[in-house]
Amino acid sequence: MPLPQSPHLSQFLLSETSIGSGLRRSNLPILQPQTLHLGHLPTVEPSIHLPLCHKSLPDALILLLSSPRPCTRQGSGVSVPGSGATIFALSSGHGRCGIAVIRTSGPASGHALRSLTAPRDLPPARSACLRLLSHPRSGEPLDRALVLWFPGPQSFTGEDCAEFHVHGGPAVVSGVLQALGSVPGLRPAEAGEFTRRAFAHGKLSLTEVEGLADLIHAETEAQRRQALRQLDGELGHLCHGWARTLTKALAHVEAYIDFGEDDNLEEGVLEQANSEVRELQLALGAHLRDARRGQRLRSGAHVVVAGPPNAGKSSLVNLLSRKPVSIVSPEPGTTRDVLETPVDLAGFPALLSDTAGLREGAGPVEQEGVRRARERLEQADLILAVLDASDLASPSSCNFLDTVVAPAGAGSPNGNSQRLLLVLNKSDLLPPGGPDPSPNLRPHLLLSCLTGEGLDGLLEALRKELAEVCGDPSTGPPLLTRARHQHHLQGCLDALGHYTQTKDLALAAEALRLARGHLARITGGGGTEEILDIIFRDFCVGK
Image (cartoon, rainbow, N blue to C red; front, side, top):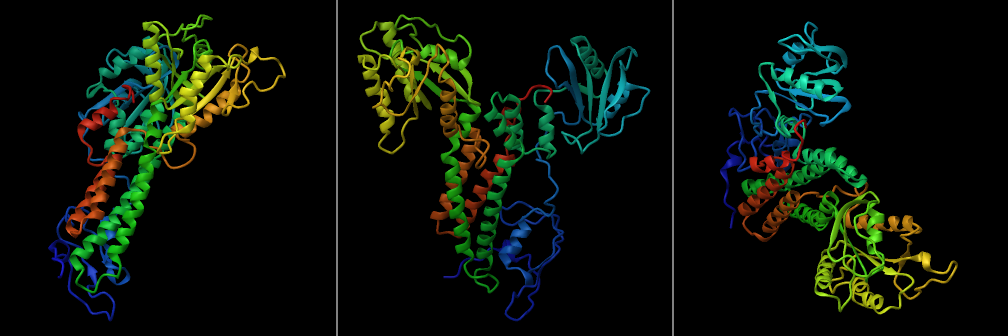
């Protein structure tokens, strides 16, 4: 039974021309309307002329669906509240400092710069010049400062921008900010407004904006590396590559719907689209399986220190956090609640939890602490199991080995074992040069929290484990650092699942369009104002 013909492509083709066994329709014309609609596909500019005698019809459609100006970065199309105004803010943070940076963005930036440096003219673009800053109304000198002029669109926001590098005393900063506020057309910036304008003018994609926010908040080396990769556009480029694959597959399906009964299509068009979709499903599935790693890298892995009473857990927490987080006492059962502190472990962010010693027969308060400790163990990304190296034969040590260490090593029925590092503390109590106190134990590390001996080996082991838990930001594909990324990739994968299951080509094309929409939302296309508000709210006022 012939497939139903959809009119929305074939109506745009011109006269037929016989060219032997080649394509019958010779060219796609320069269309008269201002936009060309291909089903539900995005509009493209009409000034395109494609000779089909050199390309198959699906390839011509792919070119037609692609941007006619690939080297020009387009704006996001997102409206910016109050975008006609010129904004100003302190960008270098509050407090006394050697140099403070104040910047403006908007059409009145040049006027503001002239007003504060009168009677001098604007400095050369992107060149630092020393100027005397004066109040525009009273003429009172404010400071001698370096000023820079960034005419748009060659600026961070895409608008005219000016920067004032002033001395960082509070009185100087306050005086310059008040002077800028007196210039007509200027107002104080809102949190994240500079970056939001850069996004609105196509200077940054949404994933790059998130990378910039993560870079500002990065506290560890791993977080810094990951943020830089995302700011450089690696995640955005990956999503754009996936979107191009979907565009090609969609063009093949649309072409088959419109011209499946003609001789214009090469054989195997649908098979090629199906193959590309299957490959994309595998790639998306692999990234989704690693999604938790990127989120751990951004927010911190949960590392739980556990063991029997008096094994030195609190001493280890204090040693790793470099501050007295927990009370240390020779009396067993000192820690009765979960104490948590964020730390930098071998360059990775972690939330370190000190827990109550695991034992039976204690009082009701300590038993509540033991219950909470076991609850934290179930939630842990990594367990630091601590035992007293000089007391491995005690009932509490043996019970801990049987109930915590052995199950973690055995793993679950599905093959996923919980990560655990076994640390034998108090190695300073062992006889020097003596044999290993525990030759039958699983691989372990010897440590003395008192002398610090063995700490370097523990930190190296932590680095390797956390690289597996959080992902190594220096290698491999870019990580998914936010739940938003995971949500849209899962939506894209679900839509591709509908594509592979449906027998109706029109529904298959719609599924591909839906999948492309999810990918577009990752980089900022089609995002709602509510989502954008949440993202830009993470920025400080001057960014």
